[in-house]
Length: 441
Image 1: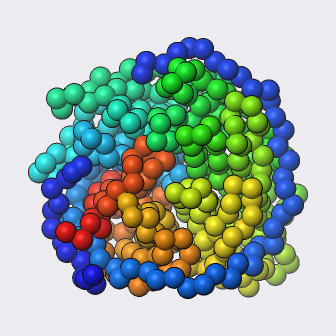
Image 2: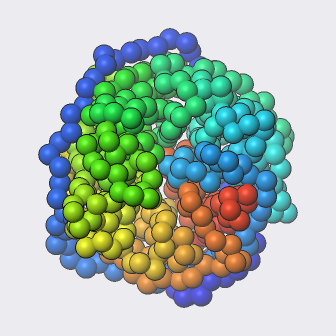
């Protein structure tokens, strides 16, 4: 194994939906007992981590005209933004069009010379769209134009694509839907909206589509408060998992808003799970909260950084926390949680990763941590022990909020020895791309 980065351009390897809808009864989700702010880690024996070796392509510009107003292209972090299929590499971004509530999405495909060609476009609404891929290569763009949840679908053929729209049933309408999406290896896909925020009470509305039955399953879940920036993980056995961060006004929690702080507080997150989306309502199986104190009145416990469902069914949550438990220090942590909410592991991550981190696996099951600093860390096959790191070459571009977008399985991209990466830079105007190759060839 080599410890240097090889910088060269890699030759890229790479529905018709029924209107029938099955609605589950509205469920009310009560929080579980809140965990301590920093759960104790399970003692695990050290296991080997591979020496860092990766071949990185040059950084390419997808666009330098991305939307930057409220809810612009760099907003969020939870969205699925890039896929790799048998037809190539595709990413979705938004640009300004009219006013901030009427942006447009662009679907771009990477060309063999490293340029990017826009092959489809449409109205997005305020916030960035999600992009998913089905096993047959059909692409799905999900947005909220004019506040209505909409999915455009089409399959590339001979360098062209026709994207046909349909309304998604039973999701919340409005400009601030905090749209989320995810899919599994069978092509089952789930789309979620989140509403509330100004008082105690919130809602998840989700709709899952099965290509096999050609039906939607929908549900509304009433929460104690609004949770947003949701990571969505359907699985091939009919299960669904969500990781989401509480996002409410300080007054909704009965907190005094500290002077100069943002109107909304992000000091808790949760993990929801159901074993059967058709029969069993979602249950919140894990919660973490960092409460304000007189010494630390502006707490943070925010899971926007990343959530990843591994090949063993364990949920990896990368979150940052600040408050009484950290004596005011901003730190990033990784928790590994079983489907029933048991904390298997929770540890502080290297500060050298930067403010935004992602976790993923390669085709052999090895884990990696990718930080906004450009540091790439190897891990073991449990995603527990952090090994050595190498510095990627981002060509002087800073990785801004919302961090990296990856072609991970929840986008519809199968595990492989390559990882496709996009990120915002230059005050959000740029949408940039590079690929990591772990094949060792």
